[in-house]
Length: 155
Image (tube, rainbow, N blue to C red; front, side, top):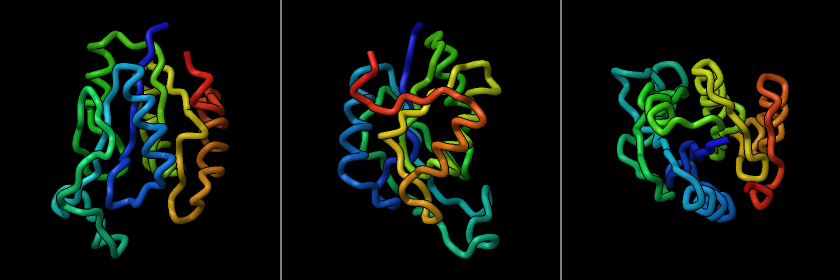
């Protein structure tokens, strides 16, 4: 099975814990990797109008990946799926920020594209609703089933 890593929005504006940055870096160095960076453009996604806050309009990934892809909103753009398909990936290992929103949205996109999304449970944090990430892990388990609990177990 050919695997790759998707690092979702591990960037300064979301104030990731150091352990998440380190685990994401280790995973991205071990496999072909894509990292998304969420940016704000009100004309593309009305964060401020609808939610009263915005991600930064300029921010960068804290994880060096084979490919960095900008996104606007919760879901990954088509370029993320296209990249994994071009690498002929079977399973995508997912880590990052907002397990219950952006990470979950990535899972749906990967699943719908016929890839096998697999969450790395000890390499995610949740949104402000549940910073522990437990809600996101349970939602992932319900929708996709595939979870690895410890990033050190991945071969």
